[in-house]
Every structure is written in C-alpha cells, then in structure tokens.
Amino acid sequence: MELIEEKLDEHHLDQGEVVDVVVRFAGDSGDGMQLTGSNFTLATALYGNDLSTFPDFPAEIRAPVGATFGVSAFQIYFGSDDIVTAGDAIDVLVAMNPAALITNLENVIDGGLIIVDRGAFSAKNLAKAGYAVNPLDDGSLAEFRVLDIDISAQVLAAVESFGLGHKASLRCKNMWTLGLIMWLFDRDRAAIVRNLQTKFANKPEIAGANIAALNAGHAFGETAELPTGIHVYRVPRASSEPGLYRNITGTQALAWGLLAGIELAGIDMLFASYPITPASNLLHELTARKDFRVSTFQAEDEIAAVCTAIGASFAGSLGVTSSAGPGIALKSEGMSLAISTELPLIVIDTQRGGPSTGLPTKTEQSDLNMALFGRHGDTPVPVIAPATPPECFDIAQEAVRIAIRYMTPVMLLSDGYLANAAERWRIPRIDDLEPLPVEYAQDSADFSPARRDPETLARVWARPGTPGLEHRIGGIESNYDSGDISYDPANHQKMTEMRVGKVAGIVKDIPLQEVDLGEDSGKLAVVGWGSTYGAIHQGVKRARLEGHAVSHIHVRYLNPLPGNLGELLGRFDSILVPEMNTGQFARLLRAEYLLDAEILSKVSGQPFKIGEILAAIHAKCREVEAVQ
View 1 (cartoon, helix red, strand yellow):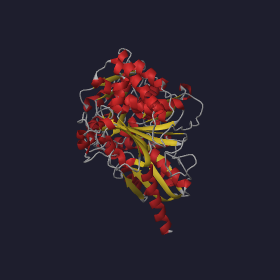
View 2: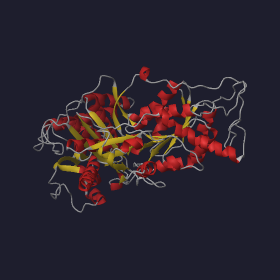
View 3: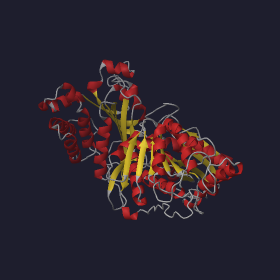
View 4: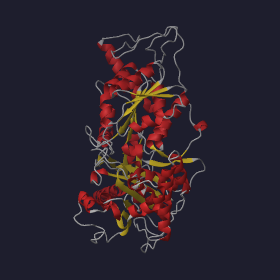
C-alpha cells in the first residue's frame, strides 16, 4: 500500500488516507475465505475503488483441518489508481489459524497489520502448522502490528440468540471478520446484508446469525480500544469513464464473450466439456445461461467432448470445448480431425501447473508449446490469449470471429489466475460490438464441399439437410478440388500447404502489435503474453518512474504472430520475456526473429509479483549500461 504523501516504494499503514492496499484473507478451506473475499470485493467495487483479486485455492479437496497445505486464501488489491494485478506484499493479513499465518507471513510488509483468531491458536493447531511455541506470545511478530482477538468467542456471543448450536455458530466467524475489515476500510454493509438475506432466504435463522456476526465485527472495531495505529483507513475512489460497471472474473468474461459472439454471428453454440480444475466453472457459467442460444453437454470423457463439439459444427452450430492441460492432450486427435474437416471449433485451455495431475488449483503458462505444435501432422491452428480478466470477453469474441471466418479450430489460452481473478469491468453496449455475419452455402448448383473463399481459403459451410448440398467430410485426406478421399502424394502436399497457408494468412486480419506502455524503441522491451500482463505493466510503470528507458509489449496473437512484431522488437537493445513456464514464448521469438530474448521463468504455481519484474528490469538495465 502506498501513502499519498510517500514515495512509490514506501508502504506503511499508519495514516488515515492511503492510495492503495493489499488485503489477504487466509484460513482453512472450510473457513469461508473465498466468500469473505468476494463480499469485501463487492463492497469495495460499490465504494468506487479500482481493484484486482487473486483467489488462491488449496490443491487438496478436503485437507485435514489446520494443515498448511489446506490453507485457502483470497487476496484483493484495491486503490484509487490503475489496478491491474492482485498486488505484491500484503498490508493486512487476516489469518484464521496458525497454518494461515505461517504460510503467508513472509509476504507481509514490515509494520503490516496482522489480524488473527487467537481462539484457533491451540496447541494442536500450532503443532500442525509447525510452530514449537505460540508466535502470538514469543515476540516473533514484533515487527508487525498484531491484532489478536478470540474471534470464536466473539462470534458465539454475537449469534447466541439464534440457537444454532456450537458448530453452526462458529461458521459465522468469517462474517464477523468481514465486519471488522469493513469497519477498517469504511465500507458500507448494506449490499452484504442483502446478499445474505437472498442467499439464505429459506433459512432465516442462518441469515440472521451471519448478519449479526457481520454487525458485531463492525461494532467491535468501532468500540474496542484498539492498539495505536489501528483505525479507519480511507482509500479515495478511482476515476472512471461514465458507464455501467461490475466485477468480473476471467471465466465469467469468457462465457459472456462466447455468448456475445454467437449473438453477433446469429448462430447457435454447443459447449461440450468434461469436468477438470480449473476449467469446469466455464461449463457452470454457460449452463446457467439457457436464455441465450447455447446448449451445454457434459461428456463422459475429453475425447467425447471434443468430438461432440465437432459434430455440432458439422451441423451448422459453433462447437466449443474446454479443458486444462491434461484434457487438451486427450483432445489433440479430435482437434486434428477438425483441422482436416475444416470446421469451426473453439478450444479453451485454462492452464494449470503440470505435468500430469500437477498442481490442479495453481496457475501456469506451460501449454503454449502444446497449443502451437501439440498435434500429429502439420496441423497449425490460430492461438490467442487474453491478458486480463475483462479482456477475456473481447478475446472470446475474437475466437468466434476467426473460427467462423476461416473455418478452423481456434485455441484460446487462459490460465488458473485469469479464470479465478476478478477486476472491474465497464460493460459495453451491444450496439457498439461488430457483427460477425455467417454465410452458409445455399446454392446447390455445382456445389462442392471443397469450394473455398479465395481470400481466406475457408471451406464452404454447408448445413446437413439443405436440399442439394448433401456432402461427406472426414479425417482421411480429401481432394483439393472435389473433397473426395484422395491418397495422391501431390494432392496431400497441396492440402498441407493450404492448411498452413490459411492459418498464416490470418496475419492480414489481425491488428499490428502496439506498445502497451512506453516508447516503440529503446534500451529494453519487456515482452509478455497472457496473465503476466498486470505484473509486467506495473513493473515497467515503476521502472519508468525511476527514469529507466523500458517499454511493455504484450502479445495477444500467438499464432500467427502480428505482422510487425519482429520489426518492432528489433528496435530495442534488449528483450526480456517473463512467463510462467521455462521460456516457451522466448524461444519462439528467438526462432522466428533471431532475437536474443532473455528468459525470466517462474513455475511456482503463483503469478509473478511486481517486485520480481522490477528486480529483473533493474538487473537488465545495469547489464545494458555496463555493455555501453
């Protein structure tokens, strides 16, 4: 968090008004930290701050209570300025048990505020977390401001009149804690109260108990004699363009973007998938939107899902399927079938830590090579990637446009961070969106399923059942002119070159690469793709404020690459590529443009921090200056 009157890198929570704050809620997976964070995010958005969130789920479905590997956390970075990442160092940590404290303590700033539930710091829980002695009593937290409250006791007293019983009463701890944090940052509780009343409309005693706990936590902040330096902090509202805003996660934005795409195209969509973390929520979002032209289907496996989607596209709808890395590997043969039949298909990969089962609830960008090259034969597909949760809306529409215009599968690369993170989004007017007209074959005169658009090379799209347009397509190589099965070597050469040329030709139909921040030439360009956008953008912004000649370039079109990208990168003395893999995009840039792109790799399952990007920029600038 940055104080208005302090320098950029000075972070202390010790005055009444601050520019930005990082708050992290952490506890057992059953402590309701995601719900707490989501409600605080709602209140913060309604207040008018810009924000970005990072839900951090445990990998275990139900880890033992008090275990460090079972900690669930929700981080929110909010402020009055441009917020494009969930933040770095934590200003306020809410730790509901010792495990939450020990796993997050190293990220709390010196002098940061730590709020803990003393009632959860039992000998048993301390031992599970690896503490030999209670850190609340041994002085090890002296560099922080610690507010240790027996939240359990406070909650039991607050909800006693509702007669819920001991266990059910303690489930309201998260709402008590939320009430305290709402007081700390001067947030209105009205929206949270309405949410609770709606959520538990059929269980009024549960709603009443949670509301009572929320109010009790807020009252505690107002009335208790808190340690010096702990009081209400106000974060000024962010300036915004006029319009209607809401919080949106990457998954929600993808779903809405797909729905907008088919409305703009005037076609139906079948979304077929198989459950897998962290991609499953996209199926849930679309299943709830049957009021649009979408049907959803949960298949028995990944192969059935992609083949069902291909069948929908053959029938004249848009087939869409999604998964994470392991499922995308299983879908690869089906994708090759869609390439061979030249049918539109959208494949969404919400990447996670690998290999194999890997880190199911953590984030990574390690499927780029698979997206570009992970199919048998020469089977190129367009590959695109959003940079922020709101941008998922636009990129999903772009996937629809490319798929139906070029009659090709399109891969859209999201990841666990983009999928679950939320940012403020200005809802566009539907009238401002470009139509995506679809032209089905109608004329039966001299019809051939191999007829092509001379500009895009897209094969004609003929719906089965249209009189005179009966046809057959399949996975065996087809004759270029007639579409019939062909084993002719020269024809296979021609068809392979056509498939490569069709995807390569998309470069004429995508925007030229622009510089996201900074000049279009200079000493250093930090080049990224996907969800690294926020950390890179803030790191470059801070480096520029320090006087460094550094620019940020973020690539959304990964195949084909923008037509001017090589020339643009060639104007910089050095290229730094941060990515959450071992350097897949950096090696692609080296191969395509013969550039000495330096790799900044992170594969910890956590997104980049601004400080990590800034440190790498500092090191690279020193290196460039030493050479000069």
